[in-house]
Length: 548
Image (cartoon, rainbow, N blue to C red; front, side):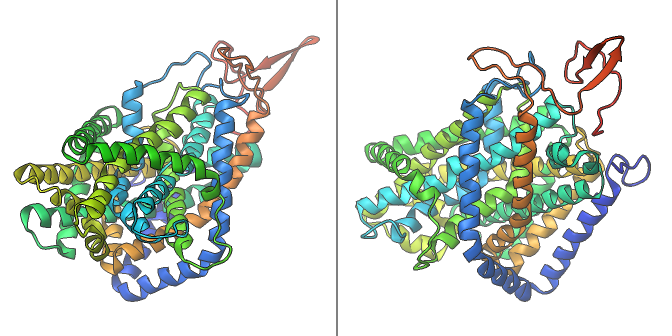
């Protein structure tokens, strides 16, 4: 790959970096200079694509869910992401803290109150709206969009990248999954296109989440400090967040990113404990259990729902957006999860990345969304109107309705801090991933470019906020996700082809043998053939694999 040795792009793929910077800055210029037309463009594109995406995204995400379950429970469950005897780099707690913080921390803070309230008012699966029964369905639909299906997307990208990087010693980039399909051609222009599309999807996914988080922080500042909401304030907050994020990412994954992730994980636990103690405890526990049961009972129906009758726009507004958001974020979160998952088996990985974040998500939404629903149903608090007027302020309206005085103000301030820390962890992980891809998988990309991409992300998020706020952000991320969804299908084929040559341990507890891939070389020695496996650390490698 074209890695520069000197100059401004030293350590980076110069061509990929130039193309990506040009495309994003062009988007920044057009969106900033023509905000109304840009907003209209993204909305028109979204409306045009919706009928196609309503079944295409559904089918793709459904396949990924079942595919990941098969990888975690089938014949490949004992394959390790690394050497056969390699152990995990991080403890389970640190691992889960980092993958959850980078994965859905900001988004779940934004939607955990707003989405159950909105689904409570209207959805295609409830007969009578705004009833106790509708509350259960509203919660289960929110679990659906934040649960197993979404994490199946993240986990597939992560396990594929980790497998090829740590087990086959390829660069930690998206293109590495295409080696079994394209061979040495992956190192050329085709691989560059794949990685550029991954970076663009990542950038728009991060910008969307940062935009949502900044809007929510703005609402929190208005609630706690009585500071009026404004676009100017949102931009100022964004600049401060990105400055902190850039500084923390320069300290590396083992320091800044890890410490921030663990820190905001503990803040999240404090927030959950607060609601469990001061909220409607019995109702929250009961609602969470019952709505979880509804989610489990209906997950297949929801997974394959395509709105074939087109009698409502619910599927386009919710499922299409969320699946597009998860797909756009998947190169970023997938690479980050891959980076911290070395040494884990397929079984451990799938159980950890699918089940643990989903369980945390259900508990979080159950307590936050459940409190808001209780206020609406039993405390005569009109939180529905508040959410409809300002989605970003839903969380703080819910806390204010608890009437806890100064304690409630302290909790609101804590939530502002929590949003900020999740924004920082998402932003610094994002800049690390972008520069990792553009530097051909380097685990230590140049600091200059990490800072540069922090600035570019700030600019893009700012102009998208100016251009139209939430609707423009949602339309942009759905559009950016579509090209990368095609790459996901090619990655599936590449992973299956590679796994088909693994010598797996069928019995539980047995270690796997190294893969017998096409790049294993044979050297004739007399009448015997010596197999040289580049993945076996105890055997000397004679020459480079064919694909490299």
